[in-house]
Length: 429
Image 1: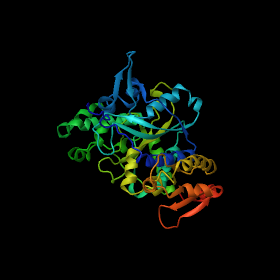
Image 2: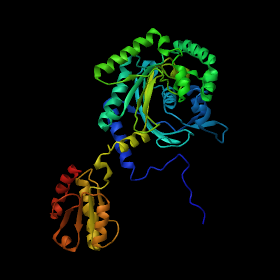
Image 3: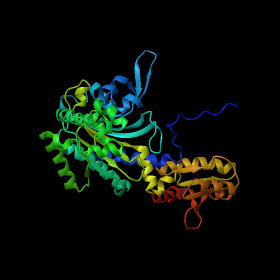
Image 4: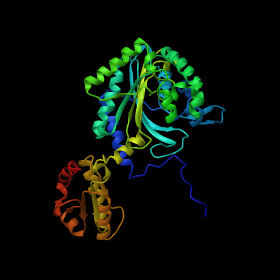
């Protein structure tokens, strides 16, 4: 017998016992975004490779080492999307969604792909919810995105476990001046840098600021500081953002070494981080990318956005014990029928109840079995109540209703009253 096939390393099945928490999280986020006036957009998971080279930057880790790239039968180089912003900008440009200064507030959800070393909270196929806003220039929208996420953490009950880090990268022109000063400093101390930083020193020097090497970080304490090179426009913008967060009571820390791993960011960058998940501490990150649309062939268009990793936030909810008890239950009421006549009546009765009590999660026993075995299935389903329909109940046109959780006596409910009775249980659920 041949060995059963398995999933690709780092690409995981999300099993039935896990999906209720995913659906709870995704539903909470989508409802929140609806409330802020954001509209959903759905992009394909495969794009031309050139899209990511032009937007992310050819000397980034993502493009150099992590993308899933292949040649199709037409000879085109295609890539499974490693992130969502570039694909969203491509869609906005292709369909003229932000032309003539038109404001767009968009969000998306779906899988992303990067060939990294799989570890807890970091996978080769991972899922993100992303938000992108076009044609709003000032710090108000930067603040709105952060306030939106702050509200989400409150809804999920995890505010105490996350911390907001902020920085400003300045405009591209100001950053170019700083880049030259940083490269000059790093070149003088090249022998003291870790191998990865020496490799990045000329191609992507700002990422050296994010080095995980303790020796490199010690050296960087004497390096030129990005904040000393910020242009006036960026200073005013950053001050405006901080003032709005202060007014709203959102705590934050300034991290001058926060640069993000993508080339397209400018001015505001931010990350929400946690110390509850080991080394995989970033759960949401983003910032401004005012030059990206023009870089990709469009007219100069302000842009700002963020992305949050669903796997990490689901893991954080589980780690903190913030999983609502109700979402672990997939069934409210379980109907046990005994005998062929009762089974036929159960089909009609259950459909009638579903018509009259929308949202009630009612499961009917799908196969024959003894009273004991059916009740075991009812209990295992997690249902709050079991309904009993046997020969006696059929003759009297009633069902037995037995609580499976907590105290309470079994009752007999007339078929004509069943919908009203179950509507009460649905509200309890």
